[in-house]
Length: 158
Image 1 (spheres, rainbow, N blue to C red):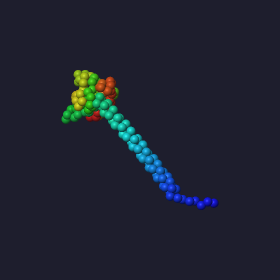
Image 2: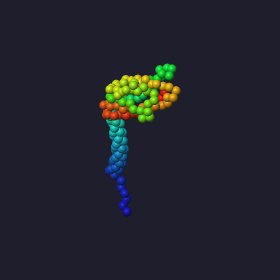
Image 3: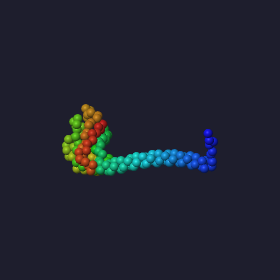
Image 4: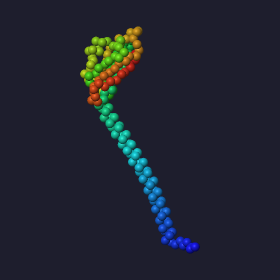
């Protein structure tokens, strides 16, 4: 058997091998972190794009609602309002469960409403009496820049 002789060149070669293995390991870790960062940036970009699209849609959309307002001593009015960022056109009202509180002549005078601008409202006279139910179903239908025949069912209460 021959004795194993380790000279200075072998030590340098072994050190180079260790250093090379360490550099490879560090590079792989760096690449993993970089891949994770790229994935995070992609997710963030997708969220920002989605948010931008949602804002663009909301600029084109009206958001209508209704509420009863007490004027004192059993006098009420129904307020139909637009809190959206776009004007509502051709606003119509439907009563899926019937209408026993709003005055038909007042509705017919005001609806269909040609335009309901953002932050604008229209009031309807409510005839409240002892037999009036407290919750009503009102379906609003309108057109806006996002499309035609948008619908929202509201449940205003007295």
